Image 1 (spheres, helix red, strand yellow):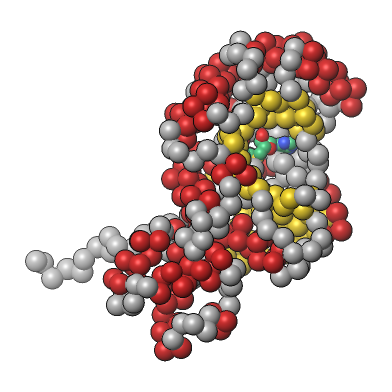
Image 2: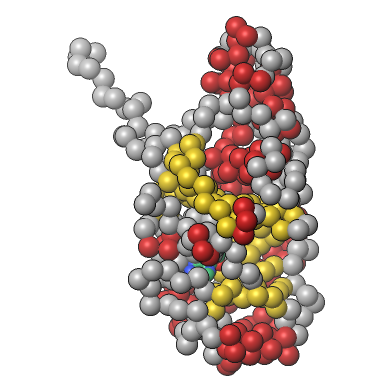
Length: 373
Ligand code: SAH
């Protein structure tokens, strides 16, 4: 011992601190253990979990089954505040709601609630920013700030669930039926936290939110090893592959990770996912005028998909491009989109065109930039 002060190796650099640990980060038995480690009764974990996931409570004052003397400590151990809503923008008479969140370290993310006549979909972020640098996507222009924690991902969904349960969304009381990882970030680049969030959302209460894994869609640029890992994970979510071009030459520009995993490799992984999980894969294709919307590319896309089999393993979801300010990419003409659909369907590929909900509040695909204006 030299008597010198120890280097502060336990202090992470500022901005690299971890998000507060929350019960949604942990399986139920881990919550019990964490309380015990803090000298608190383990059985309270179940009560706290039921407040969070089943009763959708977020006000500790209402958790009257917790002993008043312990309540603060229980809540700060398992239910710390994770994020603050900075603003809510609404469209479609309040049935589309985008929330801008500030996370504990100042990072900003957005989530979008979309209510349809028969269901509610939450579009959530998995990273603050994104490192994939797709040139047509607003999120991709700012780079990656950091991965989100499992609880930060889950909390976006639970915030929507609470708003629905409190009647704050027009259309009566409701639940979240679908979760799509199509907000900010590349979910498979934050694999562990995303799979953790899927588990929490699909586990029955009080352990989790109890929604169906069939209602969850993970959208990816095509991180092939992670797609293969997800196929073995035992969480049968729907996979969406952001293809956007059927040929490497163009896809190298539109989805830069293509220089690492090519069209063929990404489509093979998607096919393998469909085979392993028996879940139909969705191919996303943002329609960009005179870039990727030529009729011959529709034919080529159909051939690329059909080469893996025609047993209904895939469908194509065309996304009318949402134009990002300052971007050279513009939306396809309607007649080109219609011809693209005709060509795909003529070759037997089921095709849909996504609606552009939320574009007027910059809440549609690719528009989430999370800026404080
Ligand atoms: N990182 C994931 C999730 C991204 S958002 C992924 O790439 O799949 C979901 C979808 O929106 C992706 O298919 C993405 O390519 C698409 N997208 C991005 N920018 C867009 C834009 N300006 N218009 C339409 N779709 C866009």
